[in-house]
Image: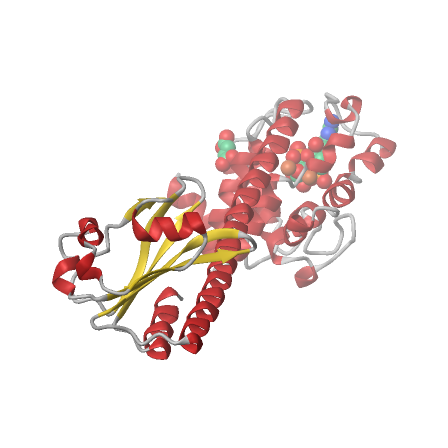
Length: 338
Ligand code: C2E
Ligand code: SIN
Ligand code: SIN
Ligand code: FE
Ligand code: FE
């Protein structure tokens, strides 16, 4: 973008060279950003304080600074040993101001005297104003992108925290969420799922049982089978998750797993009694991993099963609980690491 601005400056103002220094509000320095029309690297290492040299002075005073003949101002060449070789005569430093704040300075160089009439000057100031707005917009966009990236990171930390808190409460399922998440993402990759969707799957898997925060300890940690009444409460956990997470727009694409991880291929799962491919793919993939992990882990109501027995059970449930296309990929993945 800066190159485009400089090309315009050179063509429209008919000058030999121009460069832009950008103002960094953090360091309060003017730093080289782009140039056009130079035969050397004269100004590429420029770094000025506000008030320093002509460019810094123009920014400090917020007014255009003009030198008609650089040769009679030898101080101008202290900035770079190459500047003398360029043979410049005329010089302008134009402060770039947007929304009342300096964003940089435009420097214009010409190898002969400039016939700068009123129109030329007006035009120069118009170009500088446009450049300042363009730079300011680009900076705003950059900051916005950074804030967004920071926000996403913060969200993911919060998700991790919730997920760990739930695992801690479940006691015997400690680390369950992290483990099933890792396996689910690997399985989803093998199923050919793309990167964006994998991110949603990662978040959804971390949060799959978050609805259990609303299940009383007397049910969640019960050392035996659940009564019908207790089952009714336990089976609410997927919809409780949706209620908890629905207001968070960022997590909307991650809700398939929390909502649908207890659906079954044959339509006898909960909460929506979906069947076959009506169940979101992410949830069909996740269900295999979740049940495998549950079976091989200790529960308050039973000891963990050996891996072999769990795999056998998963195979028996093809077409009943699980998607026939997912199970073979899972078995293949698990045999690879055994
Ligand atoms: P979870 O312990 O994380 O188990 C996830 C899923 O793994 C279960 O969903 C079920 O499909 C499968 N699974 C787990 N353990 C076994 C098992 O011993 N045999 C078989 N065949 N499948 C098993 P489901 O059944 O919808 O259960 C949801 C949640 O309800 C469980 O999460 C657990 O927190 C709770 N729960 C299930 N059964 C009992 C129980 O007998 N006693 C208690 N206290 N809680 C239970
Ligand atoms: C797993 O969660 O990946 C397997 C756990 C186990 O076999 O104990
Ligand atoms: C779960 O809700 O993720 C597992 C339920 C079970 O252990 O049966
Ligand atoms: Fe669950
Ligand atoms: Fe689970």
